[in-house]
Image 1 (cartoon, rainbow, N blue to C red):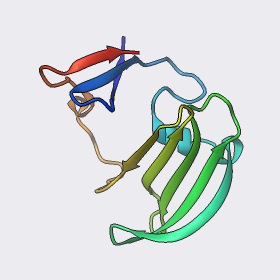
Image 2: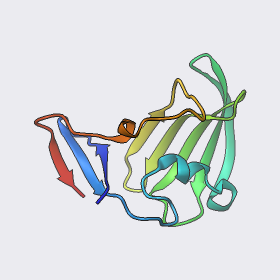
Image 3: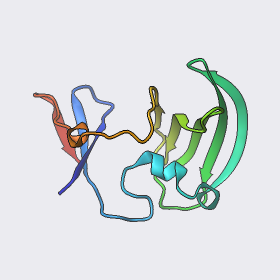
Length: 129
């Protein structure tokens, strides 16, 4: 069984979810939800140009056309120089908002397997979903 841990809004607690195999949205890989076949999955709208961390960004809104995505809206900051996403703001179907900011991005580098291992700190409450 492969588990995915996600932060909880309750301090000292994480949510643990079993990673599904395959599927149209590739489990819990948020970037794949956004970047895989965006013209098929979303109605897109250009919002504005903005500076983020000293870099020039295009800010785009994505509203899903497909029901299996777990959010109702996403706003993506795309770097004008390298086209990489630098920030995501996701509005979940239940009303919560998650913001993910990406910094110090490096492409095509080798990554050790233990980079993806996670062990909750001692005393953390784990809630199975």
